[in-house]
Length: 267
Image (cartoon, rainbow, N blue to C red; front, side):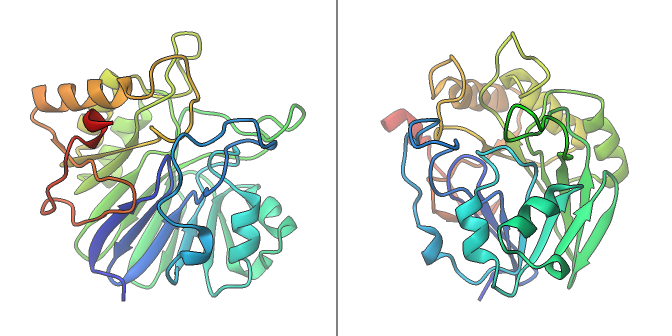
């Protein structure tokens, strides 16, 4: 049975959040992050295969990039008793892979949907979408607020830094936990992903008590070393007295209780 409050990171931006006895799966990708086998190959295997997934109540998609939306996984989940939540126009892609229309809820920014005791709200990010050269920004992208009876969780999605963090913090914070993307930054595209120092600033803006880093160590999507981001974020979090939770892939953690290690230092 799902816990009242727990999380499992499955690599990159794939995670399971258990809240109020509901199990939420976000951006499930178990293979490579590109349309062809040699594009964006995994650096580390997933701790489980999609066929080993526990029963899922809700699937949340942040945007349609290949490293966040995997066709084979959507096809596998399509006939399950699952509520699919996605940004505007992404639902058409899901239907194309067999997900029934009545299972899909598309959300614009600042729109909400409920699932049992959970309230799930799509919020802005600074990013873009598309899966080919001719469909850029034809679908929306989003971060999410997942609020339960007692816990309030923020999922950053892919994003550059912007005023949206303060707006989200003011409107929906404070947060018990913030899953923040920390990797694939580059000075040439500053409005795509967060730089390490911006990760800390974003957590402060949304008023998050604990930082859970995501979007790293699984795919080589930038020019910096794979462990540079997590090393910098861990140092900056310590300097700013921000609690950091860094489980190994597949580890069950209860945020605020489970002790985690600097596992990347041992590789």
